[in-house]
Length: 464
Image (cartoon, rainbow, N blue to C red; front, side):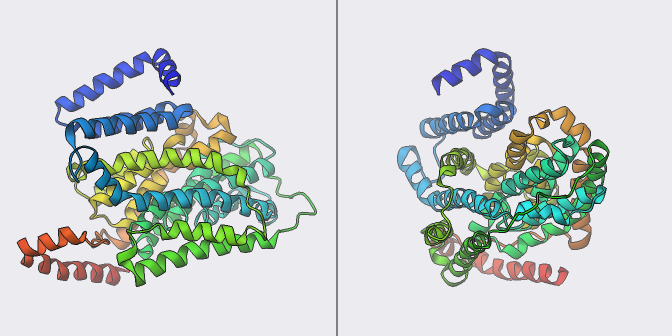
């Protein structure tokens, strides 16, 4: 890693100097040093696409050094404070690691089932075929990880468009995969994080209102772009047969994850912060079905590398002083979508979950779909551009994918007009020690919050 840092510093001294100047200016203006270090880490991830893991680990190390040496943690100073912090965070981190690795194997099961290979039979032979493919990606992403949906869509597109895929259509593939996952707690890492953290899946579901409208707004122009660039040839190779046992395995893994989460959060909520039940359920299902169809274990090293990158950013986000963020509102949720186009949406979601007070459907749509506006704004975009390197031009992506940004804004305000903004009541109970202290000090305040929370839930139900 030292050699990587040295090479980066040697080649990009101007960027490092500029980052240092901006960081010092932010500190002078009163921005907390924690956020400056975190912002520089995210900027490094955005700039150095080929060294994202190293940048994330370096950023985490610098933030930890600052916390250990100067600022301390909310749970105390030094290593004891860090140990208590990790005791509060290890379950969500372990759950996410289990899900990320498990879903990599699940996605391969789905691809090897040959279902993606027969999907082109359903596509019309004109521009509507390109639009139909985007909707297929949307549906796939609602139950598969958005990275997998984008890669499957990119594979089908390469086949039906004879290897010539327009950059505007690449942007649309990424947007469709992010839109489909935005309203489903099993369709995107950000919504899965919300689910693991205790957010009701029904509160996330309303994101489909905005995402569904956005699909038409960017999907039609993108399909027309692609048809002019390289018309569709929708006939798949003959003799393809679906491997139904693999389809059944995919269904069983998803059912295991859903059942574990529902059982723990409904029947035993006091245990949800003590063990990574959802990740364990996914791996139990993989182990049980392995004799039926062997998973592609060789995928795990690559998936582990990407998982460590994401978890490093999430841990960085968990160390931020959340009380200093802007207040949760629809304006903030809208802005997070644009921020997500530049910075990774995983840490943004982690920060918002710690802050609370959001209407989770808006947050899911903002951080999920908003990252589609620039290719490196979401993991799906980064993954797809590894298949199509021509997409790694921010200028061309913005120029030809203009319809994605337009769709994001229109979809957001359509959802606002139809359902309004209703911040959700707290979805997680306070730790017992904090609750006990709060009850001793301000018993009337705690009791007065309950009717307010019930009224909030009632307003949301009536509005729906």
